[in-house]
Length: 451
Image (cartoon, rainbow, N blue to C red):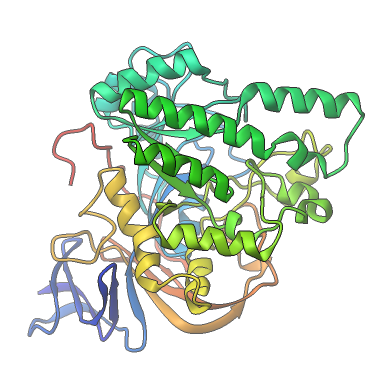
């Protein structure tokens, strides 16, 4: 007896699509194809695509800590609604800097997640010892900031070199936010001296130069030390090309980007203000730059896509001025939809959608083949997609506490219609199903026996 049979779907893999039924027992895929076995639950997926559940490796749910902006209950419900079945989370307000803090967070979150999750740790300049213990305790990766942001101190070149050397010795992995601290500080001081409080300060404060300079330093140190390094939220082509040059010289560097760097334009901040305040900010100035970002993604120079989901409510965004309102965008429930739309527009293929949202993130952080693929033995994380569904994105559809999306009003084609986490239905037609606590913590690659 099977627990679940999903019948008649077109399964999408990185190698291409094929028609197959998906059969599930005890949370895992046990067969693909037609078999003569009864099932407790049968889902008719005729006309739908079956994708692996999205693996979103960069989200912020602020839990534990002040959760007015988001918590694990609402954040993972939003993820499930958007077709995501695993997230890797870290919160700046309650950072994980040692193994005890990780253990406390795991205990706190045990009843709070609708989908499976990993937990990342922060590197603090005065917490550079004990990283190996934290890796062996199950941290998915180490997050480093090269500039002071969100209350997190900058890790400057000397400490960064020490950190990279240490992590390289035991093959850990680092996700780095690349903006040069000296440049962002100088720009902020100059703009404040001028008395600027207009929305245009954002691209002048968080400049392209700050991102490029920090990326160059980080990629070089990655090559010199051999540390496995991911450049977070690469925002425009010169950053990606710079990383490619270091990779060609032997650096183990990957490039993460986010939908906002493919769809949102730099000058939108002038009208939208706080609702386009995130960093690095949107960089697109014209269609040529957008076309080049899609080319870099399909050429695998941009290796994978995450959301950097960091929501704030409308009231929070409107509080104070452009300097003091919070950074960040919601995105965990719209990313798959935006990439499905891009596939219908011909900017990317469905096979590449699976590669950049599912398989490659799972491989990079050590969760493959348990996650990121539909194959016998994998977790039954399945997102059923209607590729023909045309709809308009609206704020009142959003599950996240943010209650809004930067893509509101955009007409898109393609939508997740059912999301299964380890064979259990956790979302249908954009609404979460079931109760938090189903999702499990999956320790990172430093823990023996993963997968």
